[in-house]
Length: 130
Image (cartoon, rainbow, N blue to C red; front, side, top):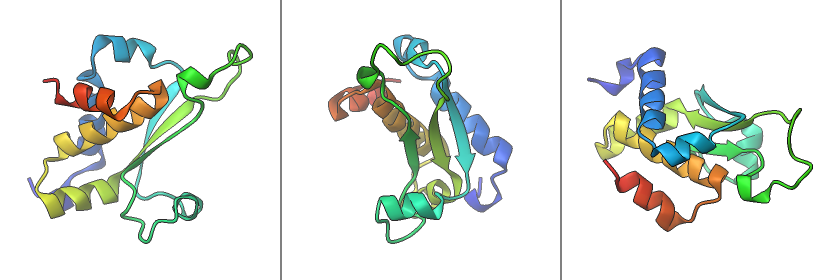
């Protein structure tokens, strides 16, 4: 499948499948969080991360990681967000030969890892599970 003809639905399905492959204990922790597919990070995000190109960022977690939530965190808080940047992900797949499913899963695991407060080693362990 050529990456330049991947529909928004196929991309969204890849994201949903990536979440579905996460271990049960991870899925049970996903509360008050949404996944958003956007073409590119907005200019403010690019400036915040000092990226040289809008293609430099594949995904982003915004919110309060679970380990940093204090007793006051609760009802009424806006959902945390995991942003998946469609065009940078597709460009990365095209450049590296990584499949869309594998790349999206990598980004999802990484951003969910930030939400959960996981170490890089923990994220790698999750990513390496079938």
